Amino acid sequence: MPFLGQDWRSPGWSWIKTEDGWKRCDSCSQELESENSRCTVTHDLILNSEDEEIFNNEECEYASKKRKKDHFRNDTNAQSFYREKWIYVHKESTKERHGYCTLGEAFNRLDFSSAIQDIRRFTYVVKLLQLIARSQLTSLSGVAQKNYFNILDKIVQKVLDDHQNPRLIKDLLQDLSSTLCILIRGVGKSVLVGNINIWICRLETVLGWQQQLQNLQMTKHVNSGLTLSDLPLHMLNNILHRFSDGWDIVTLGQVTPTLYVLSEDRQLWKKLCQYHFAEQQFCRHLILSEKGHIEWKLMYFTLQKYYPTKEQYGDTLHFCRHCSILFWKDYHLAWLFKDSGHPCTAADPDSCFTPVSPQHFIDLFKF
Image 1 (spheres, rainbow, N blue to C red):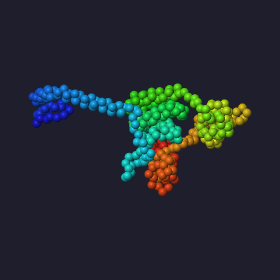
Image 2 (cartoon, helix red, strand yellow):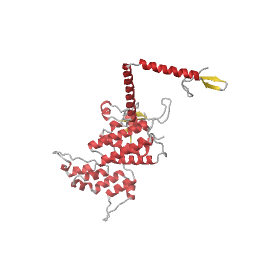
Image 3 (cartoon, rainbow, N blue to C red):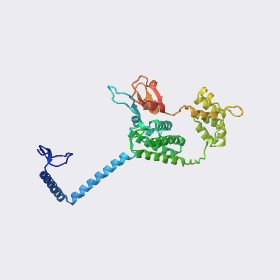
Image 4 (cartoon, helix red, strand yellow):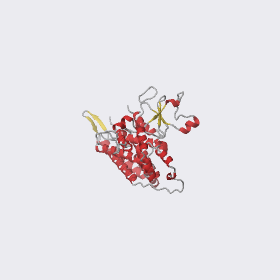
């Protein structure tokens, strides 16, 4: 019997089953070709100038839509955020929930894009991006990686606009560029999501951001009102004692000669060492001056190389132990409407909340 159809052997040809197997019927094939040619001629005759214009417009519109679709897929600035305040963290399948929550999914769904605009959460998000850049970048999905670099682009542009926290971003970009170099050089040794050219373009983008931050010039604000130098010494000293980062103290000491003298106070650096490190730690790395005094400033930066310092953030993500939910806590809603930031079913929700450090956030999704 004849066989007609879209077949891998030869679409549109006629085949006849014989004792020796299937054979193509040449006569039917010629008839089909002649019929197709007649249909083509008839179609050309039917298609007048007006129809041809409509056909061309539809074809152009289809091509335009396809280009826009491809551009959206390849555009690194395309938004893929859920903008949610909380997510359920489940590590295994249950009767109620199937699957599990990954680091990339959490990074996509939690609203980090708006968090960088909040001065209390900015440092927290930067630290989290830095930890991901050091060890978890390849574990992110393609969409999560796109969102990662999209958020990083917003952070860099924010720093370039308001000139705040450039040192934090420089450290983040340095770690990220080092990781990208290792991944690109060792291609094949680790699984990379996406083409190698995409990773090379990302490295070039990071190097461009580093160059922009390197060329960043701080503009001097002209203000005829009260300045930091007009404050009394005890207030300036009190401000310096509020800092938990030694580099911030050094940077502030470069503003005026008075602040430089206050920033070199031995008691200031002693309290900073005692805040970040245990007594057994700095006793192992004692640095004495020629007169036998302890050099607390040098000890701080020396101990920083061996031991981690205490992290201090204005606001962090919170984890509810009762509901297994990771969420941003909205303090305005909590004060006005007694809203905990997520639909908690506990009798006393506040007792179930635990602040989540950046490292704790990474550890939540290790299986």
